[in-house]
Amino acid sequence: MRIVVQRVSNSNVSVEGKIIGKINKGFLVLLGIKNTDTYKDADYLVNKLTKLRVFPDNDGKMNLSLLDVNGELLIVSQFTLYGECKKSGNRPSFSDSAKPDVAIPLYEYFINECKKIVPVVQTGEFGADMKVSLLNDGPVTIIIDS
Image (cartoon, rainbow, N blue to C red):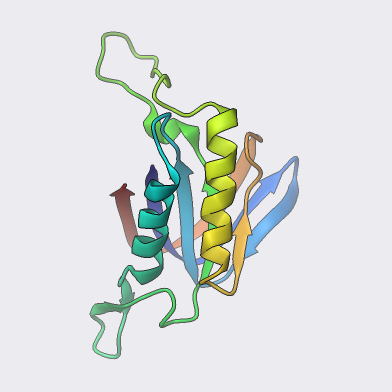
């Protein structure tokens, strides 16, 4: 699994012009699931994500976690995180991205585990054509692989 974590002042995701998920201060999380990923990978990333210390403390140092600042999560599935571009040609290959029968249960598990820890968790819609808006704070963007 791979997550791209963006520290945001606010973020939202819409489908067909309707906002379906919206947060204030927190993390926009783009979640990619590989065809070999397991629940163990999800547990690892939930632990890293919720304890990631990238919010400023009183001295301005990135020393506080999402939980320390009462931050919120917006989780959006994104199979393109496993797009492979190393081979010849310019079209990415997505053969490492999990198919829906593998990805959906892991996506839902990841969300549910986050909800056990973080009070506000919003999501996109798996497989939908989504529009994501954000105000990146910093900017701070971290990539974490399981």
